[in-house]
Length: 68
Image (tube, rainbow, N blue to C red):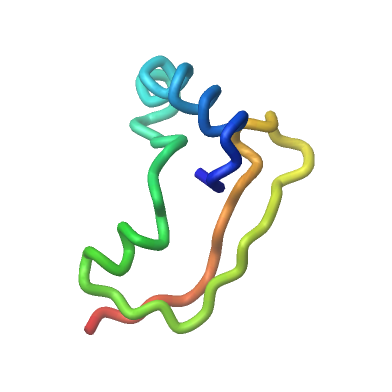
């Protein structure tokens, strides 16, 4: 989730079906916070928008995290 109100509203609406169809993928998960809460230290992170994806799934992050 990227925090845009309009996008977040739609993500919340479709997430129950999306999770079922897409292997428990959470559209509204705060991925960076979840990684930190799992005991990892984020060393590098890059936020991206996947242009060819549906607007509700465009926000993406990638990077490096190490277990602390």
